[in-house]
Length: 347
Image 1 (cartoon, rainbow, N blue to C red):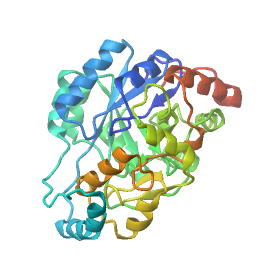
Image 2 (cartoon, rainbow, N blue to C red; image 1 turned 120 degrees about the vertical axis):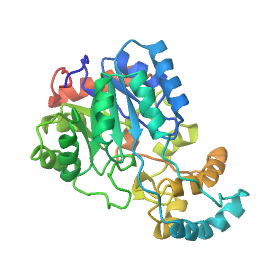
Image 3 (spheres, helix red, strand yellow; image 1 turned 90 degrees about the vertical axis):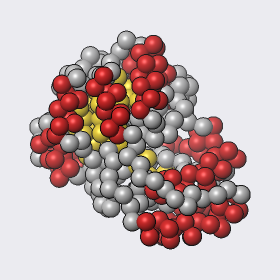
Image 4 (cartoon, rainbow, N blue to C red; image 1 turned 90 degrees about the horizontal axis):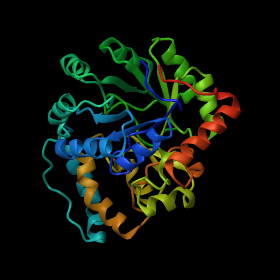
């Protein structure tokens, strides 16, 4: 797999608004690769993001899709709803009593990407069917599977993915486990890269907690052809992150992996909501995501860091301000100085 980049950095797809066409274009303009996030968007909104990005840049970019899983057990979701009712009363919001099946507009998004192919399509929370992967490949897109274990890497390789995004436990946001019920692994990123390399010779893109030159260089020396950065871009000018989220990256201390907000393991900044509800949070994605949405919206409207979902990787305090292109080039200069190489194409 090759791509016309001179800087082996990838701006991670961050669903929920943090990834913007402006961020993708800025990163691409610096010689790196940017990804849009289709998660939580409709197929129409996904197509609009693609069109807007093409207005801003002629550089290659990618789109990430959430792979839908089986529906959650309604009983465990209902029990969690009752647990959360006092929280809803405190915020003056209503929790949804019925949550319909949600496949994140999966089939329609695939149709968009076949009709309007982008350079790269990546998958999180699983893999497409063989027929779906073949359709995307026939449209001209290269495909990346997000993996968190060697077993997931084997499955992605067998399906014919062109490269793998190896997501370590240090990563912010949702862990990319292929099943919602799987406990996310704890093998540190560099060790996980070695374990995955033992299973496949596909190009590996390292992701998880990488936010400065030395950590980027270490991942490249460990065999990654590129590194994927998410939290590192949250404070840039083109990021869609809220002001409260940007502030929290510096003001709050540690991170933890929690199901409390969405029913899937995700790393975020520790706060009171997680402390109160993590012990009771069920496996249930995206049902729990929809259940807590009114609570999260109310907390975000007030900028309440104690109740917001604040996804962040372990390197969150290193996130920089300024134009994303300048941040990209500065990180790459520092990585090269730390022994990460001079410049490279992702292959």
